[in-house]
Length: 346
Image 1 (cartoon, rainbow, N blue to C red):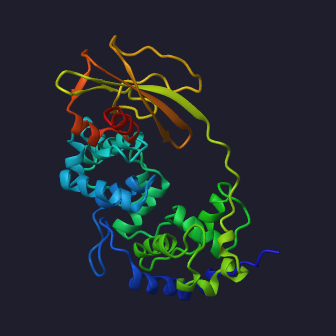
Image 2: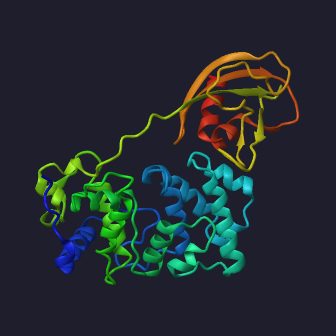
Image 3: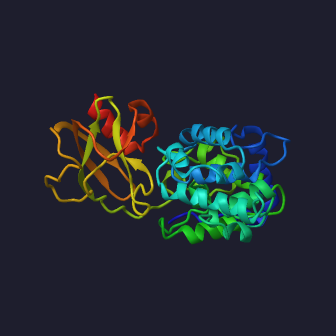
């Protein structure tokens, strides 16, 4: 029998005090976060960091955040940026539709709100590309609103705290409801950051460090003796596999031939190598221009919804392409194309 969940809400002040005291002693220093006693961070920085963190880790997102804020220090600066420059700076963060939404949101804030983000969840939700999580995070952290901010770290903490028996992803509404029961007006910006820090550093995936957790007195997962059992997860279906060919054409100056991908679809609007369609069917696709193409091996890449084997072929020639020097291409292309280009020049 699973343990009967304890009810932190029955002693909410003590529960919240325990976590906030822990946060005051152990808060992480992050590029987008204010320090103890400082004013809340600018909404632009909160919004930008949350968009970047949606599909990657803090260590991976940090240099991108620093590059963006150095190059475009305000939302109005970002709104005025060239689409191609932003897409190139985003390369490596994945989900390029988010980069397009980033620009659309920045331009709406600059053009319709005078460069100032709305300070309520409802106002933030009305912006392009801003979902419930991002709106709640910006409202709480930047504007001090008592909002229910629930990311993967918070879901894991709730699942263990209450020993939730519904597996993910079906458990998401229940986990959100439980997290909402713990929200209060006291320190609304620090509260979600404390929960997220706890999930990232103590209540981690796999085996949590319960000996360092301030919430064990309330945690049903801890009381069970097997906190790593939660959250329960539905077995994932096997990721489909696709194949394709990337064509690495270089001119007599060593420049690389690139193309602009269609706005819609995977890696939409990005600059990339010419490729065949990515299908599950083997074949010998036609190259983009006639040349003496040579086999340069293959690379493997994993997207969220499928894995890809991309054969790489190289040649020297010319044509109507976007031509870029090798080093800038290697530093600005999306990861899958960078891998293929590295294979071609190895």
